[in-house]
Length: 397
Ligand SMILES: [Zn+2]
Image 1 (cartoon, rainbow, N blue to C red):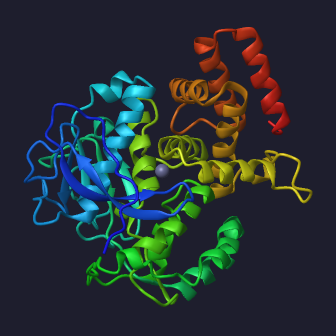
Image 2 (image 1 turned 180 degrees about the vertical axis):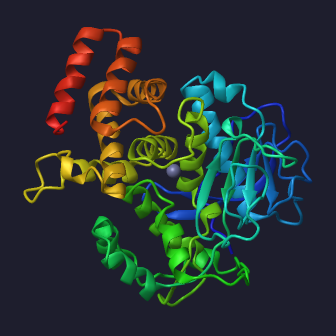
Image 3 (image 1 turned 90 degrees about the vertical axis):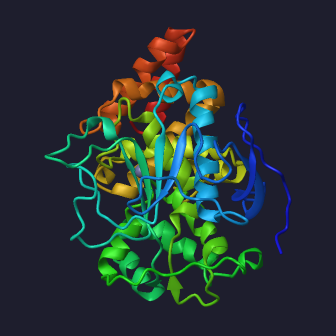
């Protein structure tokens, strides 16, 4: 039996809303299932004006039957919520005029820039999600070009022991390794006892599964949200197995949609700390969860032993993937203390215009882009750019 705590609504007009179920987070940072309204074009299909949910390699929208499909409803609800943020709060013309985005569930193919589903023979992918930016990709031969899509891979069990063995070899993941004490053993959430998933019966290698899982999240802070999400999405009562149903984690949908909204300047075809940190910033802003915000702040303020000094950017960490993403997230989030949430959102969003996917580093590219964004947007350019320079200096940049 579901416990309904809050009714959530999307604020999309002109469509007859269909009541479905999605995963929400309460103010104490716990996930729960709740009824949500979806602005479906036709109550028989998971399709809105802005998104079409499809399964596998299909192109037609997923049919809505009975009480609905939890994964389809969840990605659709959170994609609409993300879109609304960029269209309304950030007033993005690109997002407002964007063609329908495909939300593809349970797709195991490796992505190929050459066109539709070219990689049938590659190892299948599980436990992760990816954004596809159709506009820049060039099709070869008769295959169809990609439009904008977000792919959610199916889940697949990994032995927790294998995952943890991998993590202990990887110093970047120490925060996550520590976090496991908090989150393991995984408790079965009674609210989702009735939710059953079938496992794909495709052969796989543990190494691939683990690397695709570790590649999914921009930052450890997001990862913590994901770990919390496991409580609601893991149907197993023992801590022996682990999997990630990306379509069920709101933060992952927000993060992937943020890549789409930033893609007019930042094509999500490579993962760099700047790109991942930007997507994480907006995922956190869309979710607007005070607990998550506290955690992000904690990353930027409690890294040193005395717990008071802010985390400094260290050049020797330049190559440390996930740690860098965390730094970018906390650096951007800290702008809210200086400018307030709304101005910080605009400042960070417009910074994308001065960044490039491949070339922008944190020290040079990101700081310069934020200064330039301020020059274009700040009301008191002189004072505000000075505050930015001081802030960067305080952070060791
Ligand atoms: Zn990402």
